[in-house]
Image 1 (cartoon, rainbow, N blue to C red):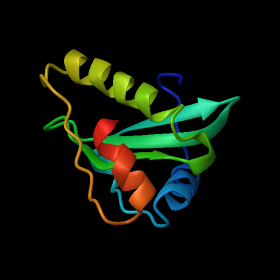
Image 2: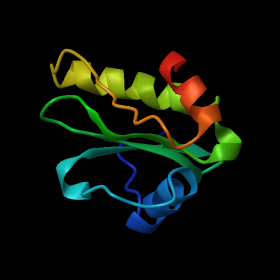
Image 3: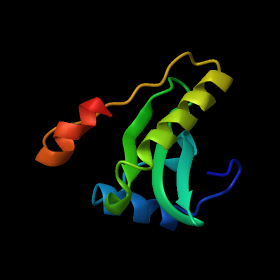
Image 4: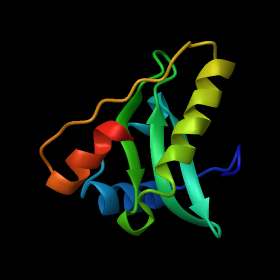
Length: 107
């Protein structure tokens, strides 16, 4: 991950569609964290600067699961400390995928 890189909405849309199947975020209200592998976007998260919540979860293209999400979370923790927010929160809606639902709480 490189701080200060600007991601295109199309790159973010591709990650989230391959993770969730659709795109929700309003980019002007969030700090967008993006994970790159060999300069290719493979993961993202949307940090709410008012409360430290990772709105809409952490998104990682499925073939990179278990490798990228933890790094995004660590970077979010660093950012929230710099912004003096005190904590990061993340909401996971269960019920979409039994396999992912079993792994999500331990993440």
